[in-house]
Image 1 (spheres, rainbow, N blue to C red):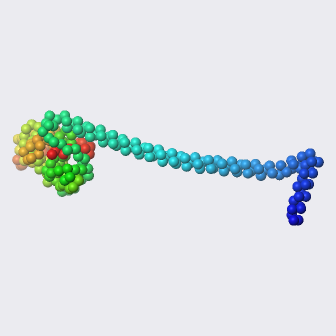
Image 2 (cartoon, rainbow, N blue to C red):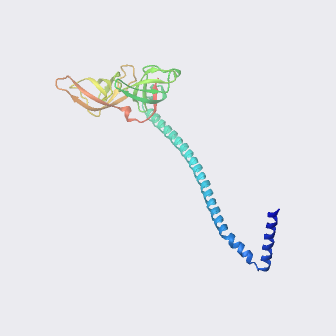
Image 3 (spheres, rainbow, N blue to C red):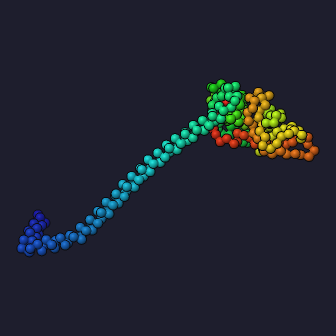
Length: 255
């Protein structure tokens, strides 16, 4: 009660002073509150700027997330376009061959190429469900031989590459000589039992002969080096596998 009375007296005194003093008391009161007001205004402005920056930063983060998502979608779409383009190129090469009508081709994807000391292989995405058989050839467009089916599972199969040491193919050169092509992990492919007087030159192409059940005229590779050992009746001929020149997962199975 006492505090209330004191407060009332102070307010009454301020009113009288303002009435009789021509606003002096008012000015004094304003001068007392001016600096704190400026200080508070400054702090409020700083808080406003800080909050704005926080919201702006959140907006930037969200925008970056959206841009990242859009970029990811574009990359996926680009990969799909490249895959379609690659498939088209493989099909176009295969359709340009004269003997295309003699083969029934099954499109497949080749993946997981592996090269171990004693074997070289890969997988295709077709298996028992699609009626795949052991020994069927897998090729790139253009009749480039990759390998043959070695093991069959329900929905995929393992193939032996032409560079597998266990692989032996009855082959012929582009000049008409018949040779035996054997896989070699380090050297690619070797030609066995080629007599010294056999006319084979570097850069010559090697094809399947068709004498061992594989389709004829599948491209195996190209002669890259010819070695001559003194005292030996045969040349040592190194073949660069043609399939290694193709960077694609799209291929065909000859059924």
